Length: 198
Image (cartoon, rainbow, N blue to C red; front, side):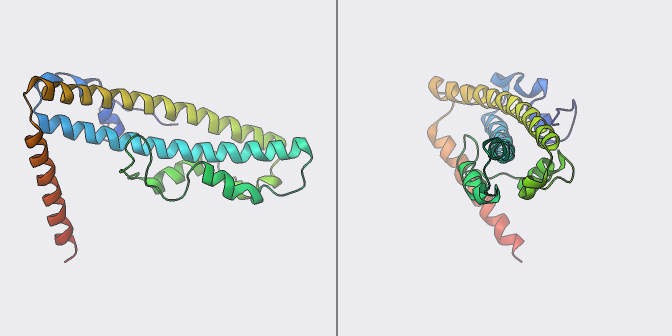
């Protein structure tokens, strides 16, 4: 289960640390934007993990429904629809920020797979009723935890965005400054990409 570790070095530890929103009014605008972007990336990652868990929950429930209704078709026939409904596949477009991609997609998949050990959900038809029920409970509990942290991260994002917006309204920050900042970040990223290709 996901947890926030006080003083931890992971992004979620930083974003949800008690002091992350302390003294926002005294922070330089670039620092505010940096924190806002960091929180947005964490929200994107949590949204992706949440979708992974939703897909697994839907797979287990579909198999339970198939058994209760006496259906004979394999749940594998429904996998494509279930995964499409949960947008599992291309990672882009998770969370509030549709332009961001999960930074730890592989890690999130491994996390979801490890929740119920070596159970292979591509063969849910071979699982016992008790194993299915246990898997559903495990996934649902984890989804609740992930959703809770995601909401907390969104609250952090909202607080940072509110402070940034307030500065523009007060005139202490300008749109030109924002454009210059974004242009500088873009130039730095391009230079870094060119350097990494050598």
